[in-house]
Image (cartoon, rainbow, N blue to C red; front, side, top):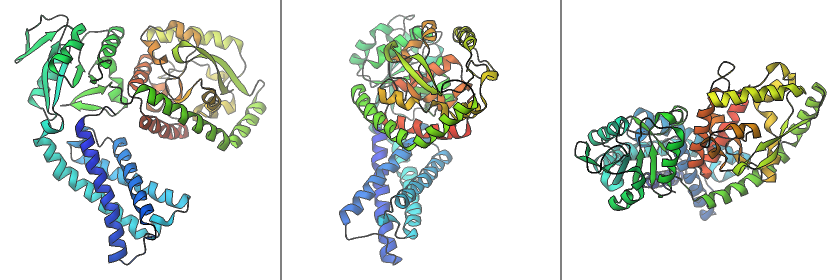
Length: 478
């Protein structure tokens, strides 16, 4: 995992505190309150359970942004995130125990309450009164990052000014890279331009840079993507501040450097390892989902058949990984209309080229009059997408990834748009849970590219869990 060193240190302390809170709560409940909380006949199983749930809490802390510096350095958001994490974690602990009738932890409700307050108090005290002062006073020990800023314009200079005068991050700026400024010219204070952008690899090696921050003004998407590619190949931490990626901090909690949002574009897990994990998880989860949801499939199939003439399933050729076509499945939600496809093609091409939000903020190009009564419910809840689990089993799609497009859409794409097809398309993704139809076309591509650069097993699980409330409440659907 390619994370700053301080995050591993925080996670280690959090893990120790949570684990010790389990142990302390068990001792208090049994020896002080005289409640039989744990089956001590099997000490190994007891401590393995504590160990597993301690790891679960670290994942919850990550999900609630407790390892982002801009949250860690605050007080109210920091404490709120801790409380939220312990509420969710304790509920998961109770649910786990009741669902599988696991009495190891829940022989006594007193133990759960004791752990909740002990753990929450312990984590809060250690973070606020030990780790935070330590971080503030010894950031160079924790972080000690040497940074190169790509771009010496207004954005780059503003970032440098913030980092110099409000530096809570232990960052040392080695210099700027810019094509419009001569090498060794002073850009800001005593910080120089150390070379051109195409010299980034040499500069990283020369100055032993740990992090690259891209902050270029007045640049198009295509050129920006090329610079991002050049930087990410160096296997260093790569972050971006750019108005072209403003949709990311708007929809997703990101790091900030002294109030300036920065988007992390560093690959977190080896691509081959992540692909292997995704395929195993996709196959097992899709198969399980089809088995469990088979009654739902049957009911929807009957309703679709009875509600209007036509086939139960709507099949379509879509574009998948590396631009390869495949057959895509959905429950049919619209009346059979041959003219609709041609109309949609014309409108969709215009939508892509002009990046417009149509239908009062919706980017879905459809004729609402052609939606069947049952189709309205299916589309609102995204239940019409369930047959894509068969696409996952076939290996055409993943559970999480960019949405597959139609062939004529792919032909209309700019080259940088096609980057979203460098991975398997998914049933759900970042822009679906962040805004679905309420984001523009370019913003949806940017969110997909953010996902591709930040793919991890944990991010996939987060997006899958966030998909359920989106489906339940139909947010952004049409």
